[in-house]
Length: 167
Image (tube, rainbow, N blue to C red):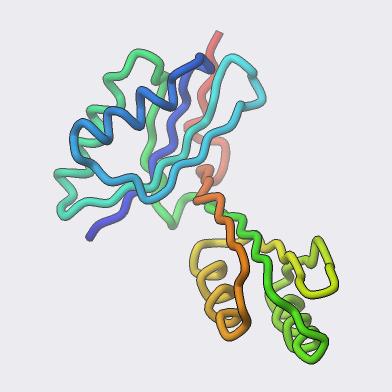
């Protein structure tokens, strides 16, 4: 399965995310992750979609279909070698007194942060690329994960080439 990261710049209007997700649903395309947020210019929202397909031709078709939507100002494929991608994960672990030191060691190795401490649990925050997040979760998998939330990938291209400005 081939994976592609798409960066969309869209008009910041109500329903735009729904219309984009609806296109994927109607066409039977898969969304692995989707993130959205207002840009420095409040008229626009940046949406990062990670999608996958059996062939490159399917991924190219997805890109063409999304680009036809009225609210889409621009769409770019972000190859891993010329972009920076990050994901946020928050984990709530059951943390017995006997486990806390070992958990803290893993947290420090990954440069994660403990953001909440309770009598019987810890909430840990980590930001990194997808493989770092996966490795972190895997190492903490021997402890009881009470809750887990992942944001999905958000991504920007490296450098200033290709940055678009709209009047």
